[in-house]
Image 1 (cartoon, rainbow, N blue to C red):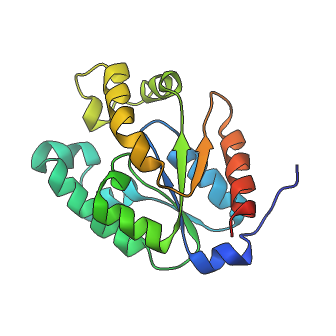
Image 2: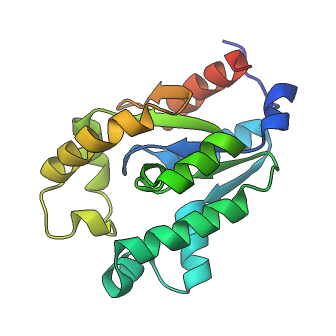
Length: 182
């Protein structure tokens, strides 16, 4: 398998590559590795939101609620859509917001990282900072969210399955899709 070290010219003109998908699918980890492979900047939208707000995502949810968070998220993602080649990892709910989704689809290449519920449950159990899972059974929450979100994530033009394997496998699959992308 040949490895590409640069973004093909057609993608450079398209601007950012934005990773979307459920919490725990590996958007941040895969995104960092993909950006390194492509030689571009990596940006985690949740980290940018936390910097802008001066508090964690969990604190924003707790203090102000989800709609306040989603408004800030949209503004941060809009700022990140500056046309420069980069890889952006979004929060699981970002692509569900009509305005944010339109912005991503119009100004970037959206990549849906998908995973089976078992993989997601295993991965989200490693972090206790997910507001939508607070005091709830992760399997139930993730199953409910996937039923609603997966049809919307499917609007992303590139779809890559993340499996219980090293994240480099997902990076390689994304690279293959990007190479075929025109």
